[in-house]
Length: 272
Image (tube, rainbow, N blue to C red; front, side, top):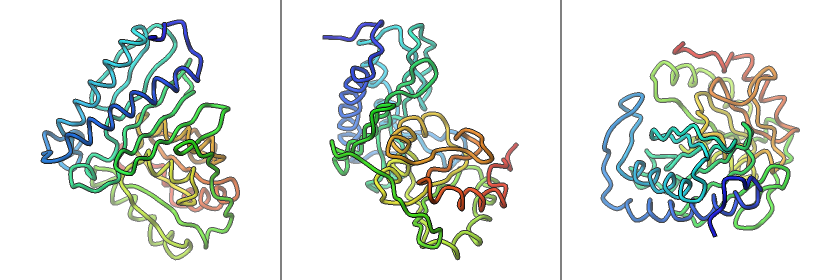
């Protein structure tokens, strides 16, 4: 039975988000073979494909069929104000460059905000058949298995994930952090999909992740998965996670990595 607009029960929203993310993931998989770049967005390296747009259309149609008064914010242009106090934050294919190149590191990301705060997060990685889910206050799971972030507290033993922006000036600034970071951590990984990087923190596959330039659709679902697995997901100097900087790490590791990033003013925007 379709949900009504009055329903803001997080479990019900999780069920709908999960169904839509699974369906969207299968559509993206079916369109992967022979996919070609269709356009660019913020820069020549920021690509978008016909699959991105088709998957977003599927998600929006499914949301509005079940909950016609909800708001929607999608990476590929969906923008519906809504009147219910619920807003869906969508990245139809997070990791489009990986998707375009046939690298199995991309996902459908569906976050659901209730009164401005993310209450549900679903990240579906169809290439690996992995479904990451979180409900605020209810924990996070991977294919039904409860998640807990790494308890590591020594920077020297930390596996750290990061990402780079599309603008050349931002890339240069981000690269300038690495000469000081690489000698003091176990290693660095750049996997190319923010939602999955955040989920990797939740599962302890990496000990920390940081990146500048994340938009709401990059952060919404994966950020909640990481938080509900016990990670701190914040910006620098007490600011919230967001475009300036997002740092996700277990409580024991967060302070040391935070302070290193502060020394580099890693949240200063070279494009401003």
